[in-house]
Image 1 (tube, rainbow, N blue to C red):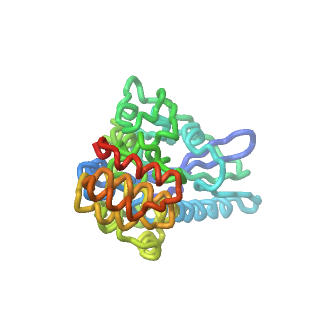
Image 2: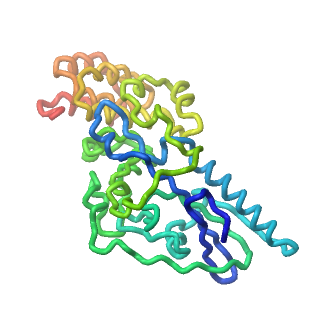
Image 3: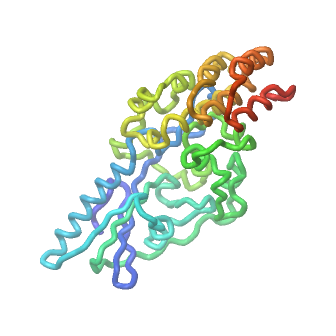
Length: 330
């Protein structure tokens, strides 16, 4: 097939049981080392895929254009098409492997010999009779760099992911409190985690993404935690307009930022955590207490606890009790 999502990655067709699935990939490779931000605790580390416009909109637009061309090329024969980009329970990675785009690596994500780990996937379901492509084989070999790089040991075995331990899940999909055992390992990651992707040796062939609409915003490459912690809800919505981070909502965003502040070891950020002790969400109040336990001296923690002695939420109250232990903040 000649049509492409961008100039670098071609679509592949998977044909099965007289029904066609066209799998497509778009390269979003970063121009710099995404792990460099982890050495700067004063800033928030944002996953590469979320540093620009919401990829769902960009990829879906390209899919619709290509689907329209497929329908036009089928005339006078009628054709049915339907596009999906994370909008239905489509097993995109196995389908992409079967269509020859890449293979599912030991980190469970798709890996390409041409583009490494940095690919968005989409699909077009159609009843057109399209020629199939050969599937891709596994090229991970004995390498386990992605497994060893995980900060929270989220891979119980190669090709298996325990999402409950995954930082991407915890900072994006998880709606509740983040368990204390994972908070320090999260570091300054406020949205997603790229560690297992970034260390893949196949990235030596990766290229920086060429799609202008997915170019990283300068203010999302290394946003200061102090600035992010000051965002109220309207400012949060405005700052992340058109960006996937907006999807998690202000409270979960602040939860993540406060964990990063607690991990910063910068006492100058403690007042910003203290400002969130009155936030209506227990998610935010709990992590404000946790951050203060790591940043503020005991005398200040006791003073703030006395001011907020009427805390009614059990989880937040538990954080206060632990914040006043002699070992708190160690």
